[in-house]
Length: 478
Image (cartoon, rainbow, N blue to C red; front, side, top):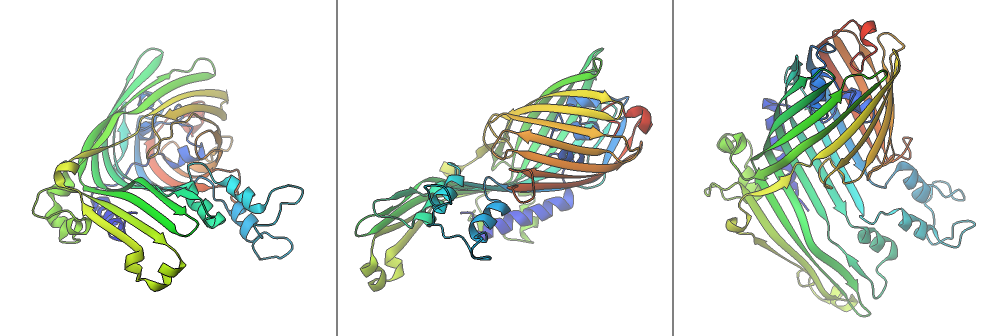
C-alpha cells in the first residue's frame, strides 16, 4: 500500500498548493442539493465542469464570482451503520453483544455468516474520499465567459472480496484467496477558460482546461494469493508502487442547451474529452522543487534521486510465505517465515507515464411546473471506472422550490452506478446579488443509517441577476 511517508508528501503538496491557488469544486452546494442534476440547472461559473453552454444565458446571470465553496466526500460501496449494528451490536437476545455468525437466521436455512458474505460486492470494498475548496475571486464568470481554477484531491482504495471471506471463513483447508488490490492518491490543479456562443434557439459552450499534476501515488497489484494446504500455508503477492511529482495535460468540455420550449428545456454535454495527465513532465511544482524541499524532502522520501532531474519513481515489492506450519512458526525466526524483497524500477522503464482524467457524458431535461417549482432530470455515464467517473448509467431527478422569496429548497434522488441509490437535500439564502447554499448528499441509501457515504457542501457567491421574483421562472432565479 502507499506508505505513510508518501501520504505525508502528498498532504504537504496539498497545503503548499492551496497556499497559492485553490480549487473550483467538482460541484457547488446547490448542485449537491440537487443530487448532481446539473446539466440544465447550472449557471454562471458553476456551469463549468457540467455544461459550459449555460454560460450563454447572460440575461439570467451577467456576472458571478465565488466567495466560498467547499465540500467533502467520503464513501464506500457496502458498509453502513445499519449493517454494523445488525451484525456487531444487534443481537436482541444479548443486547450490546454481536451476533453469533454461526447461528441460522430465524426462518431461513442459512447462517448470519452467509448473510453477511452476501453483502460483500464482487469487487470487494471500494473506499474513496475527496475534498475541494474555493477561495474568493478565483472562479468567476462575466457575460458568456468564465475563468475557473482549482485543486482536486482524490483518494481511492480497493480491498478484494476474498480478503473479507478469509476473515469470515478462517482459511479452510484447500482454499485459495486472491489478494490483489489497488490504491490511488491524486492531487490535480486545473485552470480553465470557458465561453458560450448564443444562437437564436439554443446555446453551445466550450471549455479548455490545463491540468497540472501536483502529486501522484499508486499501488497496482499484479497478483497475489493466500493458500491453505493440509500441512502448510503459502502466500505470495506482487505490488508495484509508483510516485510522481509534477505533470501536465489538457481536457476539453463541450455543451449544448436549448432555449425554453413552452415549459421544457433540453441540454447535453461531454466533459473531459481527451483528458489525460502525463506525470513526470516539468511544471511549477518541480520547477520550484528546491524551494519546496526546503520545507520537506519530497524526492528522498519518495525514493527519487535528487541529482537525476527525474520526478518519478517506482518500486516492485514482493512478499511471500513458504510452507508455514505450526512447527516452523514456533521454531524459526520471523525473517525466515515472512519474506519480502523490494527492487527499484529503473528510470528508463518508468520515465513519464499517464493517468486518465475521465470523460463523462451528460443529458438533461428541465420542466418548469410553475414560476416557483422546477423539475430536473439527468442521465449520465462515464467512459471508465476511475477517479470520479463510473462506466455505468446514472439517472437523477431533482426539484427546486422557490415559494419562499429568499429561501430556495432543493432535493434529489439518483439511481445507477456503484454507489446507488442517492438522496440529497439542500437549501439556501438567495437574492439578486448573493447566494448562500448548503447541500447534503447520501450515497447507497435513503437514511443516515443505511447510507454508505456522504457529501457535504457549503457555498457563497456574489452575482448580478435579474430581480429575484422575475427571475424565478428560470433555473438561475434561485
